[in-house]
Length: 439
Image 1: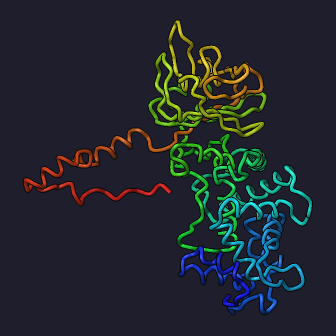
Image 2 (image 1 turned 45 degrees about the vertical axis):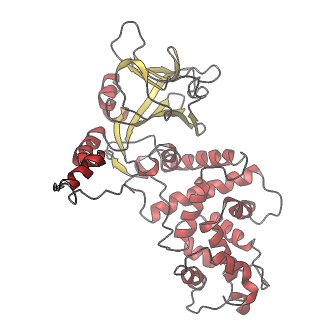
Image 3 (image 1 turned 90 degrees about the vertical axis):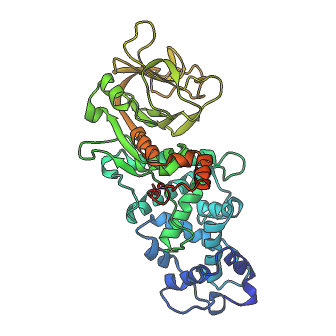
């Protein structure tokens, strides 16, 4: 691609490392099915929609592949275009650079082109939502095809198509905020995954983004969980440890029965947890707590806790700063409420499960003071259908073991320096175990 006419593509190509540029330039010929490396601007050689379908067909729907093709086709490469609807080499290079190395502003025109499809009209909210639905579905499909589900089993999880639709609606609503791309890079990561894996880019410096946390433990043969893959893709980035924190099932009414005592016993002193609740009206909601549940008559937790809704809409509600009523767990008291709660105040929790376990409430009136959440349940006072609790991150007992493995010298560098000055041998040096990579 050395001709002077392809200045735009050359500038985009410069975003990649020197050793990566031949890889990027070679993708066109590989997709085209030839081994030669020539400029399509000179030869008229183009990529067709059918060529993209052959490459991406197992990772995206036909409608999503058409959107990718339209995004490429919308690019002005700064060189004359051959007749027809094909994609030339320069257009592909610019598309890859903007998707994999571009800013939010550079991605925005491509997103609009992919959302509009073949229509030349102004992009509507409905078109954006349809695009998001295709994109989320393609991300899930790509993870499954590449074997990157990280031990999650979709066939034992809740309705995935519904999860795709709900996440697409949530992402679309966030795009209405100022700046257009203010959706915590979620859409950008989905695009990077689809394009990087779908076109087989394979750059060492640009590995596929991690969109799921690892599932460390779940009795899948007995479990039908409330989670689904799109919901995990939404929830895990909201957690302090993000995608790196492994999830393990602590409690499910499907397995452990409808027992508040069992719920408390399984979840107490287990570190941060995510709780999901489904009521008999079909609403699904829950909360994340950043600390271990402990039975005591005081509020606990910190500002990292949050409530969320899953169905009929997907949203996260973080702390407002109004009070510190983040989490509450009490049992066997005569004067204070017995049950599990998050946000609000006694009798008016944002989320409350009574100790009789069959009932709960979500009393916002109009919003929960702690989290700013509305009523999450179908009825203010609801009946339970399912409760599920997942531990997220390393269990406290393992953290304690890891801390014991670390030398005390790490915590006190002055002691280490003094021992070195006096000629003492630091037996712990060089004997530490290597750090484990959760990702």
